[in-house]
Length: 190
Image (cartoon, rainbow, N blue to C red):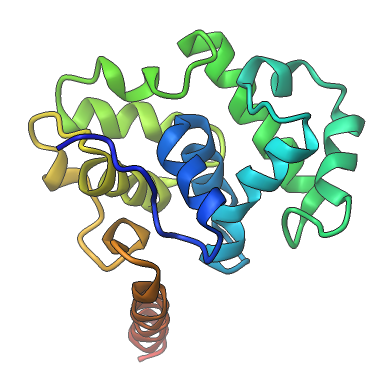
């Protein structure tokens, strides 16, 4: 499977092309995917790139004064519902990438030989909890062809953004996510 020309996670064709072309954009979109719509989260990297002068570079983001990056996130329209905390998380993610992967997000998965190793690498990223890491492994495997041995066993086994092959599927995934949360609440309450 070759790399797709777009990931259809937003109604914005340019943002979708960026997600497919730049691993850091995909990773930041996944990071931002909490307490906002999937579309908004995955459009965030495109807006961030525009606001940073047309470059999305982990080293640049890692080295920025925190207040400057926060101002970029807070500019209207804000890049997230919680722009301050997400600016900090994005910067921590980029600092981790610089320190451990030479600033290249793709290096997180390029040398992973097994699904377990890939999951461990993604799980170690700032802002990637257990479920988010599994979702991202699924996104890498299903949408970007990153498939080390055993990746399917560690990827999310529920409907996620990784299952979106066309924009119209977002609503289905959102409904499935709501149902999963409802079922979890019912289980814990009962």
